[in-house]
Length: 164
Image (cartoon, rainbow, N blue to C red):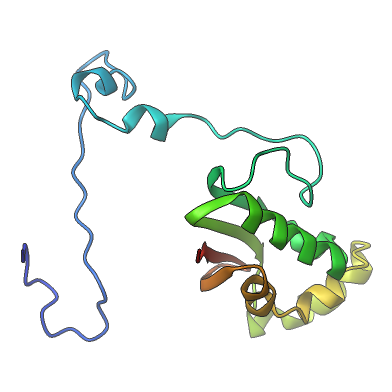
């Protein structure tokens, strides 16, 4: 079914996403909407994330039990061997079709000078190897597909899908 020709003939548009939204009544929370609509996924979608104690290379959750795994400024802190362990662990806990995302320092040529002094200025002994790391190859070796990187100022978000 075609619902729009808005991007017809536009080679740079891969997909259009249409979002239906519910507006709560005065005094009603978004969570209250869950009971109004049978089969709604609003409640689980609003559940807060659960931080896990422990090491990223040994997550305390069962195999293939998570829809998503995320990290923020983690990989530059880890030695190369541990980075690989963390990727394997993310792949282990993700359900097939799950997504792993990681916010990291970006790859912006205008800031290369800043990144060059960062390891010495802020005592980051693993940063040099992080800059040279091939994250797509590491992900692939663990059953994750490197989907994209999205630059955001001097940071980037790396996105990986669990392929099987």
